[in-house]
Length: 104
Image 1 (spheres, one colour):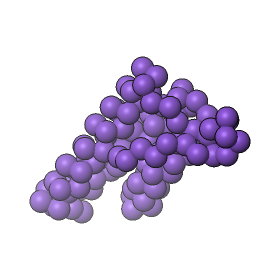
Image 2 (spheres, rainbow, N blue to C red):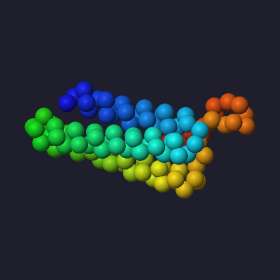
Image 3 (cartoon, one colour):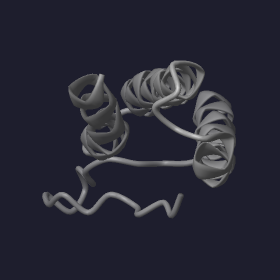
C-alpha cells in the first residue's frame, strides 16, 4: 500500500509538469485529468489505510483537506484550459521553450 500511495503522489506532480511542457491546451488538460485521477487515488488509499487501522482520522484530515484543495485547483485549471483562456507550452514564435508558469 505504501508503494502505491507513493507512486500516486509522485504521479500528481509528474503529470502536471509533463502536461505543462506540451504545446496545446488539449494535451495539457489531458495530463491534468490524469493528475486529478492520481489525487483521487491518493485520497482513496488514505481512506483505506484509515479504515484498516493504519492511520488515525486526525492524521489524515489535514492531508485530505490539502488534497481536496489540489483537486479543486486542478479542476479549475482544466476548465480554464478547455475554455481556451490560458496559453501554455513552448513558444513557437521565439523558438524556445518558454511556457507560462501556473502556480497551483
